[in-house]
Image (tube, rainbow, N blue to C red; front, top):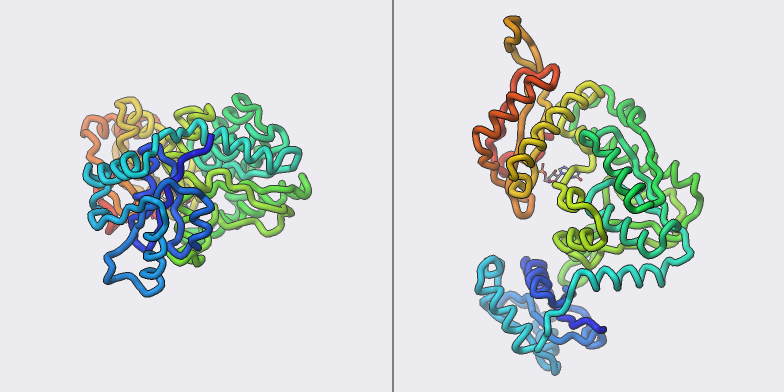
Length: 427
Ligand code: XMP
């Protein structure tokens, strides 16, 4: 079956991704191309319709005006509606305009489904990589997990995943990742316990950006060492998703920024080509694909977790003792939020081990112990965020449990700052 395809031409507006997502939400496949894409190339994709993500005529340059004329002259339905802008997409009006175009003007049937997309992708990976050696850096995050499982489905044991445990993950997380991939998927996974290496490199370091740099570089070093043992491979898997692809080119199709995971692409690994199984999917679609592939909900709905991990949530110098305190406090917080069913309400929620100690009293003696901060935010794009209004009784439970169950903490505070001016992370 050939999929119906709509092409969105980006004439340099900031809502073209939103447009693309709305079209796919209506179960019609679409791709977003720079406006300067040659007309022949557009035609070769046999689109059922074209949507112009276009500023007003007066703001179009000469080249764009000319291209628009060419596109309008094609014998394909075109949506060029001045009512479409960043604000209309979140309301019914924008959705209605798009649906009317898709189903009434282009006669789309809306039969695009994630299950068939996944099936098709697996088939393509198989054609390309069957019998070849493929290597993947698995972090346990949504993108790398879905990529790994998709490639595994296509080529099985020819895929080797390297999972670097840097000791900066949340409580039980490394074991959970290993268990899921080894036991449930029978994936060829190499887990590297590199805790000591990372902690040694981080000793005495307090500057957040330095921590990030050290972790990024060490990650690549560990990965490269392990990869060397495997020898040359044909493909290296990258969890690039569609927004990365779109944001790396401007409306003219020129490269504007390079994208990378964690600390960049390893340089000393011998591979012929990069395999990017998710490069056409938006984030919510990656989650859907994960579910189709049988990944557990807890992994698919995992909140974003920074590459440098808990190192940027222990303020100041990082060591094993502080990390363990933070892990226990964070676990209690997440457990309580999930227990009252608020886990899907908040975009990100976690504990921070502040560098501050303060006076307290326990069993009638004076204590001088750590202060744990709790942070929970609600956000769409992580560029701005509102602090979450967690019910007082939930906060109360979390606070009581932390000071009772976690050693060396005698005070819990809640962060009531939005972004901006504060960032989501504390470092
Ligand atoms: P901020 O703190 O900048 O965070 O408001 C915005 C989002 O980015 C995540 N974040 C990171 N992710 N490496 C990552 O992979 C990092 O160094 C990093 N710093 C922040 C943060 O968790 C939030 O989702």
